[in-house]
Length: 314
Image 1 (tube, rainbow, N blue to C red):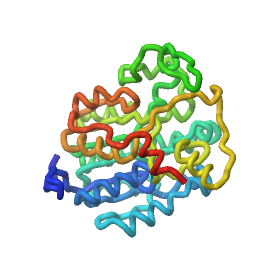
Image 2: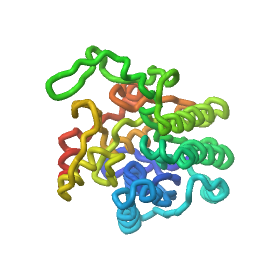
Image 3: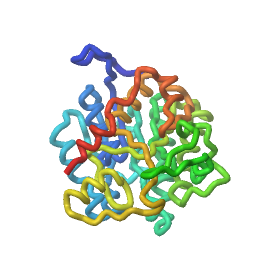
Image 4: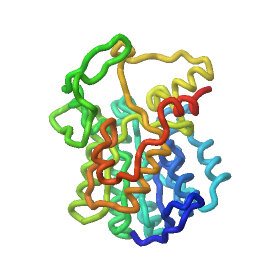
């Protein structure tokens, strides 16, 4: 990776270069903007606040954008729709980034079912636009795609479970890793569009030799999440408590279980990959992180669930 490395105040070596981050006003995108900006990167954010169109006022990311514009030093915002191939191509031609972090998405199962064209065009076509622009103007730069565990569809439900008093748990497994199949299962329309994007990111890595990676996130969270009822349940619980809303529980007697990872820890994983990328890598990022930890032992989770809840507390 052709970028300068400079020592941080703590003495650690961190990277410095230019990055393009899509979904830069969202949870992971905005955290990544702040994370890289603090480490001397020039960051170009791509976000047209389509989350507000998808989820209404609850999904509005304007506050995140305003916070970034007021609190960063090297951040430039671009209100571009990732479906706009011409504008994406022009941005990559002008900036030629050292790192691409693709976080923009339509993330809701329910919305995907009612708006399948919007869902597929944002998730699959938008990803292809970015990959092709990166291949033309930054083929050696790491390309990090925030995929989803929904690419596995219903396949994880085949693992033996045990019903406890307050929750479900695995009967004998430690978690889901990247060996879980992604075909011959029901995904939802959203999961199918993310599968298309996920496989395309892998293919650009393998076929064109680009340093791409898919992070298959489960529940990613943090205080910058614009939580809505249909997406971002932990942040939405905090919002419901703060505003006195009724919180509705969907299915499974309220015993369903999801692991949560703080957006800051995701950013740390992105940076360790960017500093030592593997071409065409295919990484699971839910529950069982052993494959990623094997490749990048310098990374680990740093923010426990108790601290996540404290940050989300109303």
